[in-house]
Image (cartoon, rainbow, N blue to C red; front, top):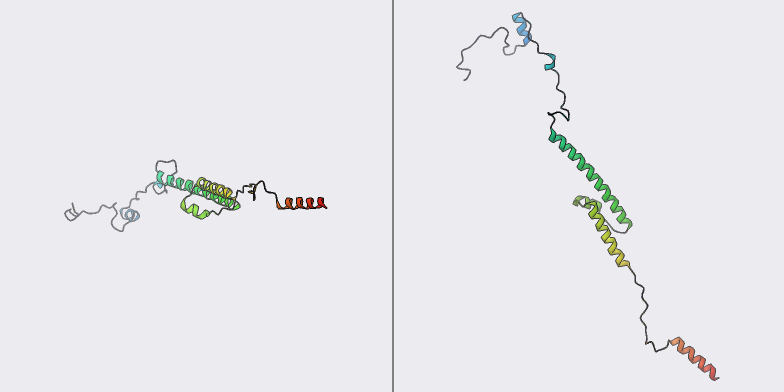
Length: 156
C-alpha cells in the first residue's frame, strides 16, 4: 500500500518527526528520552582469526601469498647461486631469464652439469704414439750416417 491511501495521523508526543531529535521530544513532552545502553555504541572488535566471523578465504589467500613469496625468494637465491657456480666453471647462465621462464633450480643444475660434461669431453686430449714415418725395416737417417762414418773410419 502506498502512503497516499493511508489516512493522516497525528504524531504522538514521544515520536520523532523529521528533523527532531530525542532530546527535542523530551523537552516537548516533559519526559526523558529512552537512552540505549552504552554497549550499543561500543565499537565492534575486529574479528579474530579463530572466530567464526573471520573471513577464512582472505586469511588463506594471505597465507598462500606469503608461502609463494618465500618459495620464490628461495628458488631465486638457489638459481643465483647456481649461476655463480656455473660462471666459475666457464658456463654462462642467465639467472634472470631462468627466473622469468620458471626454470626450477634442479633443472638448471642438471643443465649446468650437462654443459660441463660436454665441455670436459671436448677438452679431453688423448696421447697416442706417432705413426711410423717409414717402414720398420728402414733405418733412421742418423743411424745410417753413423754406420757409414764408422765403416769409412775402419777402412782407413
